[in-house]
Length: 287
Image 1 (tube, helix red, strand yellow):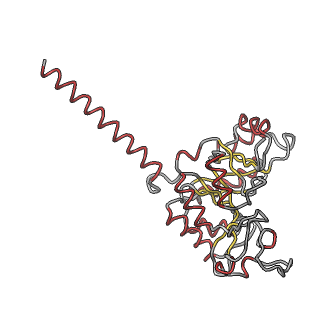
Image 2: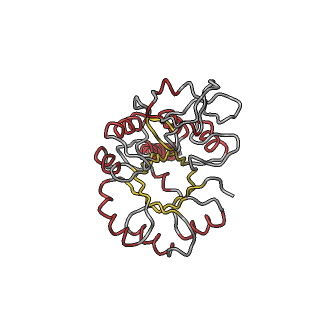
């Protein structure tokens, strides 16, 4: 009787230890960048919140907006636009002209263009980016957003395609992402020549290429797959008449790409695209 009881206890102990070891392995696969270049949770079919997500009270590309999107709207991927100051601090803005959103307390402020790369980060801090919201909002930095995303376990898509950045600036972006431990959860939305610069630094990153989908394009891009851990092909959605979506999505998947559509705000259309196999959809405000 005692021997039988001991046998049962030992069996339970072995089962518990095995369970703990399995959970440890799963945890490492999601958190340790060296064990798996792309965190498996990234492959969930989901929406991506646009940096200029429509909201009456929150400013585009600002930390308050991203907190709202993650904590209240439950987005797991948030997109941001990145530009550099004169002293090479990456900040979050869609345009390089800060007059579009910012003002100082000086009533004599000019309405002429004022470029971000003409001011240091310290000089930018005197500008209010609340866009008349009745409170002072300083400009947000990429490092602040990446740290926030790390804390909340969400992905960040960096839109870098509008401007050509120097190798030094691309290295600054990479060092921030690497130091915070987010290389497996940041999407690099790039085009040439930024694409070559980014992939020359690290070939395990998540790269997004904005291209109109067709099979011949996918065939041309096959060679690019060796330059990245994962490549996302993003297509600007117009209507269902311009291409055979289901066919080209399947072809993209067969060749190892994730397929993404921008920008869709109609939930009915979004569901149609998801049913056709789309992996990700960017939205300004889902309705």
